[in-house]
Image 1 (cartoon, rainbow, N blue to C red):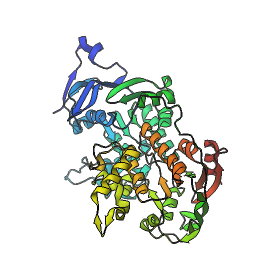
Image 2: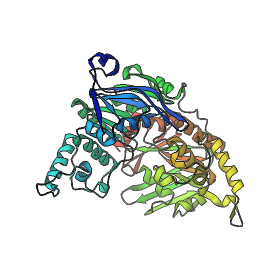
Image 3: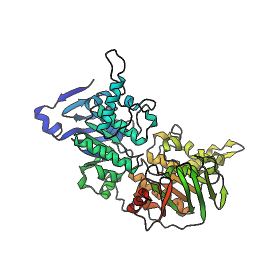
Image 4: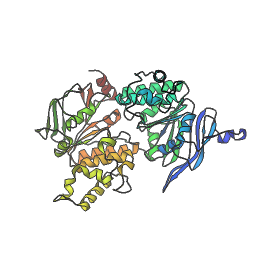
Length: 513
């Protein structure tokens, strides 16, 4: 049961938050078997501010927020919210107090309508006890209009875009009269236009006094939307200060414990022969007569706004989506690629954008996920040689610096960066010399990003691999790629060299022909 205490007058200056703080978590500690997840963490959020909570995967961010939401109980410490001390509160009780957590993976019922999802478990009733559908839809529309977002309340959530589903989550929080909203990686699946709309919504609610905790690995967003930043590392607060006191370099150093003077590894490319050539690729209204080539040892970037056709291009090349027309040549010979299996047999690997549902078997082990791409390498007379397979798995784990207790550990328990390394290892096991990789560092912390960048550069320089890379992060495109293709509405609007490309020029071609 929720317990609340008014702060005693004599303890106000010591135990309770300042007048401008809506949340203060003081001296929070949490341990799991063999792991000290949080050590004396103190975290405060002022009324009407957006406060960034950043750190590498495993730093303790999720644990701290689960304690705030009531999902976990702290071993020690206190939580003051809106002037009252809370003790042993359940998730439902924290929601009633005005705390809403919007996770990266939405907790929605896709088969239900927008209105039903907003007021789930709180459907208004008529005096006869039946659902007041008219009132429900009217109230839902009111919540969405408050966010500057309108969509028919009777629309099934399954028909919405990711950005629209996120707005439904925020509308649900507003309907619960949330005073503090936690956004966990809110931009992970948003394009630039959707992100601007999200920021506009956040600022609008800020003006009404709503506070936010903003968790993101994208440091540019932290500087764009947040007023304060708290850095966690190894379960401890490294520093908490106003945004003006931070630079990108100091923020990275606080997060990883060392300066990253050169965030992107130096490139010394040596291009070989053309290993992939695409001519006249067409797929409905999604891909329109696309042509380009990729050389051995080259990283070719693909960028553009959401909906430009970037991911669809990669899927079409590897046969995940059928083409209407077009020609694909591998090492100078035209090939028909009808499936990802066929692509792998031709030496073309694919690391999809959504690694959790399309790139990995989350319930299986690290080793299973690495070798499943080409098990026949380890078989003799159709019998799997387990010793040889294990040796190869351990070699990949060591070379790619995958942090895992054992190769038999379930891969779903690893951090996003280590999962992504396993996706890449799977393509290496398939002995691919062309790698198509979609959003290589999405949901990956800053330290693991650098490691993935180093791997991609090493593949091109030591193995002669050609990489076709899609990314929504323009600094990533500019920092890694030798050439850049800009897409808009299913067309390539520009091909830019490394030296001539800039964020401004890319955005010009991404928004205008």
